[in-house]
Image (cartoon, rainbow, N blue to C red; front, top):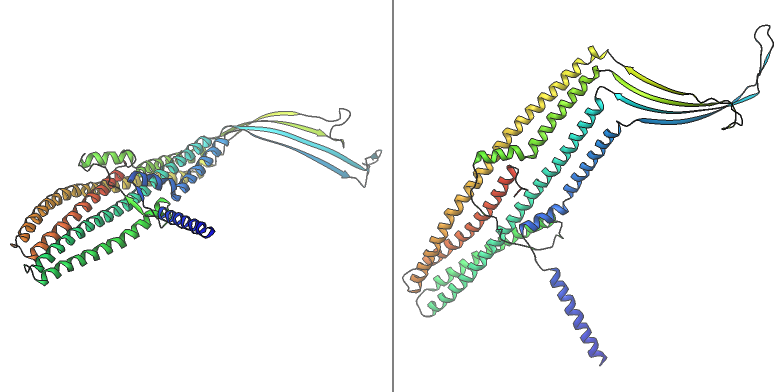
Length: 442
């Protein structure tokens, strides 16, 4: 009885382990949008970019703090031993000094810069631009990571679709082999005809193995991008993105000029160099500051004397200064800052030219991808009709096995070409969105 119970327990445990193993190996079905969300959420690059923004915000806050008044306080205790404590000057009566002396000195001061040639304002504006540039870097990294995920996902989709077409073709060729086997037994076809069909199936199996190898490689890469365990199998889904041509090249270029992060960063750099130029010019201006100080002077040993034997003066001051030597030493610094501003303007123009070329290439690739789909779809329709006709002729013994194999191979290849062309068109569409700065507006 105990043995039976133990056997049942082991059987249940074995089944449980088997089920858990089956679940662990289960494919994870993901849409493209789900893959994008997971990839962006788990990206180490984006986490690092966010830290760069946090650092820029901290620097910006420090520049704001520089405008606040400064305050400091201090206290000093002095003790002196006077070995020679008798002082006589000429023939006058000697002056007796104490053998030792104590003194406490304290001070408290508050200072505020009223005008420093606008340098503090320029520093705040500069750090604000650096913070915005860091935010733009985050957006740019987000686009780069997204397009990498999209490309990898669609590559995996193409391989899985190709694999599905291969499986369909294997099923079709198996049916053809079964039919040809019956014809061979009836003496209607030769042994060579049957062997040619079997050879075709072997070639298709080799194609399937090659696709499976590439699928495993791309699946591994996508696992890394999404933060999955590297053994996780991912099942892609057909994207619902509409593939149609809308908008002209000029409209996409206009969108890119308004939305691309590189152009915004170039604008920020121009503004930054302009602020730097103004800051250098401000060296010619005077500075004005206000301050208030309080002192505590106590010649006694105790911090708070019993009698009023201390003084506590309070003073206020205004400080106006002008380093007019900058009138002849600052001009070359101004020239250097002006050159840097001109360089930033030239860099922006170069970015614009590069951007236009990139948008044009993406637009032409997308246009070509759409045309390919239309042509290949026609080829699929023709291949299906040709395959149907040749199959009918072969069944009626009016077409050779060579004709039958050629028709089937042509249909098999055109179906794969159509699915690959659709996936390529999707990728070209996302490339066009990225190049025109619309990847996260759609």
